[in-house]
Amino acid sequence: TSAKQTSCNRKLHSGIISSFSVQSRVMGLMFYCVPDMKAKLSVLHLNSQHILIMHLSSCPPVCLCVCVCACVLNATDRLYFATLRVKPKNTANTHYFSTDEEFIYESFYADFGPLNQAMLYRYCCKLNKKLKSFTMSRKKLVHYTSHDQKKRANDAVLIGAYAVIYLKRSPEEAYRTLISGNNAGYLPFRDAGVGECTFNLTVLDCLQGIRKALQHGFFDFDSFNVEEYEHYERVENGDMNWIIPGENSGIHVFAGYPLHAPEAYFAYFRQNDVTAVVRLNRKLYDGRRFEDAGFEHHDLFFLDGTTPSDLIVRRFLHVCESTDGAVALHCKAGLGRTGTLIGCYLMKHFRFTAAEAIAWIRICRPGSIIGPQQNFLEEKQHSLWVQGDVHRSKQKLVQQRLSRRQQIQQQSRQQQLHSTDSDGGRQEAMSCLLSSMDDLSINTTLYKSYSLDEVRGGTKNKNEED
Image 1 (cartoon, one colour):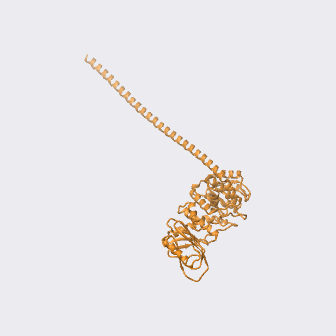
Image 2 (spheres, one colour):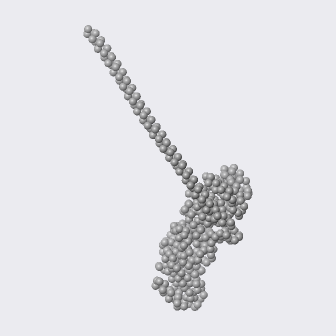
Image 3 (cartoon, one colour):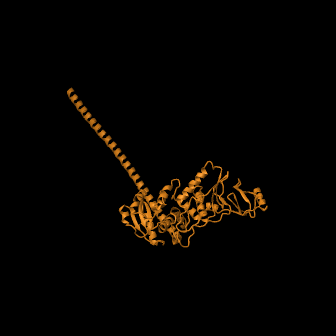
C-alpha cells in the first residue's frame, strides 16, 4: 500500500467518511468508490501515480452520493472514460468532456443504439482534435458519461471504437478496459421491434463488427464523406446507406427506402456504378422502368418481419456474386428484410459472425434486422461460413487454373517469338550464303572469260609470229 493510500485510509477512520473502499488497480489506475460521503468534496483529480486523490475539508454533515468509475484507454495515460453522477469542472491538469447531449440516437420504438456511422466519425474527429491540441497537450482527457445506462452503452461504443480504429487496440482489449475497475457492465442493445427482445447485442459485438469492417476496407475515416452520409440518410433524399462500400470489398451493397419514383435514382445509381436492383417487398412500381434504363431488376419477395427461405437467400447471393457493379437492395422500409439478406452476404463472404453483421449493419443503417431475423442469422451463421469457404476454394482453384493457363500462353508466345527469331536468322544466313555463291559465280565467270580471252590472245600472237 502506497504512502498516499495509507494517508487516505487514515482519513477514513477520522469519521469524516463513513464508507470507503479500494476496488481494483487496472492499467496503472487506482479506483476508489465513495458510496456515502458526509464531507465536502473540494478537489478530485488523478495524481502522477494515477491514484485518485480526494482533498477533503471538514464541514457540517451533508448527504452526498458520489460514484467515480474510470478507466484509461491509451498507452500515454492521457485518455480516460468515466461514469460520474455529477458534472465535473476542468482543472489545470484535467479536461472533462461529455457527448451525452451532442450525439443522440433517434429510436424507432424501444431501440436506443448503437449510434450511427456519422456520429462515430464526428466523435473520432472531436477526440483527435482534443488529443492534438497544443493547449491540452499536458492535460488528461476524461470522457465522462452519466449513469443513464443507455447513454453509457452508446458512449462506451464511441470511445471503444476510437481505441480500435486509432489506438490499434483489439476489440477485446478495449472492452476489457471499459469494464475494468468498478465499472459495471453495459446495457445490451436491442432491436427496433415492439415486442419482447430476443437478442442482445453487446458493446463488444459492436467493437468486433467495427474491427471486421475496418479489416475488409468497408470504411476509412480519412476519406469518409460525412456530409454525403447525412444527406442521403434523410428520407427526402432517398434514405440510402452504403453497407459494403469501397474498392477493396468486392461487391458493393447498399440499402434504401423506395420513397421516390425509379427515375429519381437513375443518376445516383449510374454515378456509383449500381448495376442491379433487388426488391423484397410487394410491387409498388414497374420493375421494367429500371430495366429499360439499363439496370438489372430482381424480385425476391417475402413477408415483412419474417425470415427468407433458403431459395431466396441463394438467389440473392447469386445476384450479388454474378453482378459486376453495386447492388441496390430495398424492401418497404429498408430495415428488416433488407438488413437480413445483407447479413447473410457478410457472413458468407467475409465471415462475420451474426452479431458482428447485425452490429455493423445497424451502425450503417440504424434499426436494421428486427425480431426473429436476428435469431435467423445466428442459426444460418455456420452453414453460410461453410458455403463461403467452399465458394472461396472454388474461386482459388479457378484463379490457379487461369494463372496456369496464362503462364502456358505466355510461354507459348515466347517460344513462337524465339522460333520466329531463329527462322529469321536462318533466312538471313542463307541469304548471305546465296549472295556469296552469286559473287563466287560472277567472279568465276569473269575469271573464265578473262582466261579464255587470254588464251585466244596467246594463240593469235603465236600464229602471227609463225
